[in-house]
Image (cartoon, rainbow, N blue to C red; front, side, top):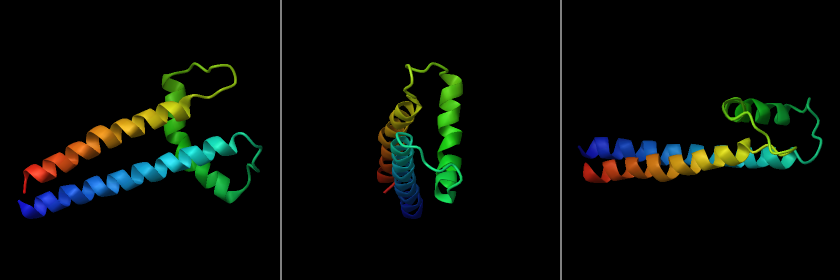
Amino acid sequence: MFILSNFITAIAKVLSIVLNIYMWLIVIRAVLSWFSPDPYNPIYQILLRLTEPVLGYIRRVLPFRTGMVDISPIIAFLAIIFLQTFLVQSLYGIAMSLR
């Protein structure tokens, strides 16, 4: 059971790091949207490819826009915070109960 506990702890840590990185990618994309970035810049293209699947899905599911403000990054933040609070902490709790 000790190995399974360590495995679940490792999954929780990796998931937490991935969620944090994804949150920062969304922040960077939101800040860049205030300016007019070069759409052919390879770094900007990578940023779009990484964030658009989630943000595009949120826009399709919740198709309303508040004027010219896109609230999909806020919804994505709330989802990431939920996953960090519920899923990651639950994984840590499961790992601790297996020790």
